[in-house]
Image (cartoon, rainbow, N blue to C red; front, side, top):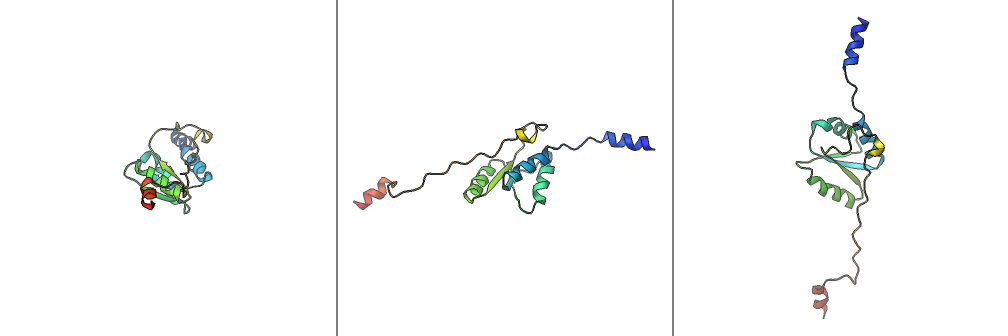
Length: 124
């Protein structure tokens, strides 16, 4: 009987650790909003974010919609991420190889000298 239990547990493959590593890296980076298109391959990662009370998960119909959500989160002072089905990095890559969030460029401040010709011509 002990041999049967050993062979049954040996037959079950170990769960991949990459969903947990990605979750940890994104949480450590301060990501509080996650956009995703429902995907069975990322279900464990998505469930981790859905179970986290500090994270808001936004369901998209296409990944492109995530760009607007990322920009809105950044404008609101938060970090966000998109769960995409593109295989980058490889599933067996260690967490240190996962790309880190890149800073978003800040728009130039509007100054009194930065007016359009229409505004300046109306003052004449």
